[in-house]
Image (cartoon, rainbow, N blue to C red):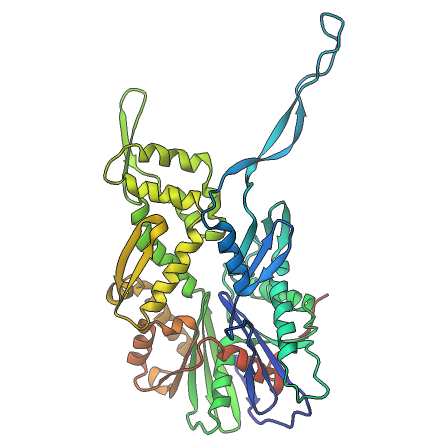
Amino acid sequence: MSSKNTLRHSASGGRLGIGVDYGTSNSAAAVFDGQRVTVIALEKTAKVMPSATYVNRDFQIVTGQEAIEEYVRSNTGRTVELSAEILGEGRSSTGQIGDHGLPEEASTSLIYGQSLVDGGQRGRLFRGIKRLLGGNDSQRLMVFDKPFRLVALITPLLIRIRRTIEAQLPSALTPKPAVDHACIGHPVNFEGSERDRNNAALNALSESYGYAEFTHQSFYPEPNAAALSYLHAHPGLSTRTLLAVDFGGGTLDLCVIKHTHDDFEVVATHGIGLGGDHIDQLLFRELIFPLLGKGERWRRKGEDREIETAFPFEEYEDLLLNWAVSYMLNQNKYTTPLHQRIQDGDAASHKFQRLYDLIKNNHSYLVFQLLKDLKAELSHAESAKLDIPELDIELTLTRERFEQLIAGLMQKMELAVDETLARAGIANDDIELVIRTGGSSLIPAVKRILEARFPGKVVEHDPFTSVAAGLAIAEYLGAADTREALD
């Protein structure tokens, strides 16, 4: 569906456009006064803020980089010990009169549930909540003994963003405009398989922003915002047909825009669930799993013979790949087979010792962070070293091997470009400019694929802040869909 908007700016009269880009991995915010875009510094030393929320056992909440640091600090070197959850007490006798005329002692026993509790866990870290918004089966997450709605985990981040915007508004503005409105970015398609996922996710976002006192809301697709911020930064642009490629942490979003001097028209949009998080999980599978015992055999004694099978590593995989719940691997049904396998004492035993150490010391988050660092290093180096002394892992990955590993994901990206152009009814040669943005767009393979397809037409545009800037401009221009906060 196409939509036409003007690029002409009217006098602001003290009015501001505010844009908030709540992202899967990071968040950013910006304001626009009709002439100048100001990106808000959400952290002390950075414009962007990790989209992270940490809840401790007293249900006190911290956000952003502080949330990550608190999680790492509270779990470094900590051995995780799970115990069964106590649901209550059961009476094992009736207290009747016994043989000697005395009342029998009524004994009780504890009743245990199916879930396990990490008694030493000091807090829970939540990151990537945006990826869950489109799913109907995950609208609540257990935080210790309380169910938290997803909106309750997002709202503290948004409150912090609103307050930071207020604190950084230009002092020359008198009176200062109220920060009770914002243009909210969203992917073209949220992750998930439910048919109504986009509407459900937008309702959840609207509710969260409403609790954060953004009572006047508008919504705008993220790739459209990235393109709009580029158009604002290049007012004399003569090209007419643009493709914006926003490759972030959770989704890949694209749009085709027709542009004249004063107007722009969104001709087509498309988006898929493909982002940096998917690449990180792929690296974990391909690089780390074989070092933890994947593919190894397992010998054990049966009733009348020795049994040899493949070790059931697949039972560990999903929990390993989802670091926020990987502590659940510290149950007997997972650790007992590891003890047995380690005792074999063969060449592969040290791999299972690594897996055991990862589980007992809750190192999944550490591994993912180091994989992100590895990926970032390969954006400007031909090889990079992955060093995880906690697990006795050290390896070197070349860019060539990295690109072989992600070739299937890159093919999905190319298919998404095909679909976007088909929706716009145009061919590769009709595109005059490609705007590349988002953290994952920095991967050399992404750059090379786009350059090969659109030679001499690809430009990089503020990978981490372009969307927030475009959202602020969209709100100022009235280009976004408006709505009031949900009750």
